[in-house]
Length: 68
Image (tube, rainbow, N blue to C red; front, side):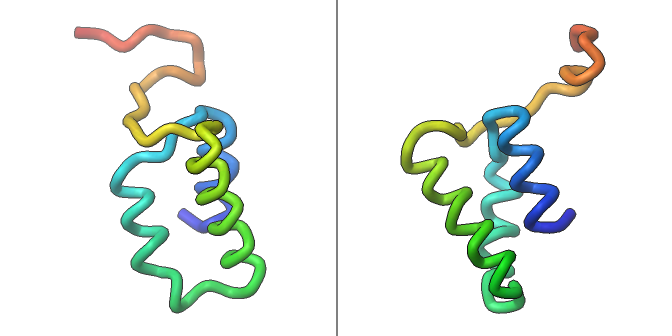
């Protein structure tokens, strides 16, 4: 996953997982300027409450409900 993909996924779902957030923070030293700006935007969205820290359920995109 790239920073851009993570950004779009987080915007689409309103959620960023702890694993994704950890990956984001541990990879900061390798980001390009554009990736750094995108990571900062994700941080602002978290601070504003537009994106929540949580988990995503399988099947949410196709409209199906997860099974037991």
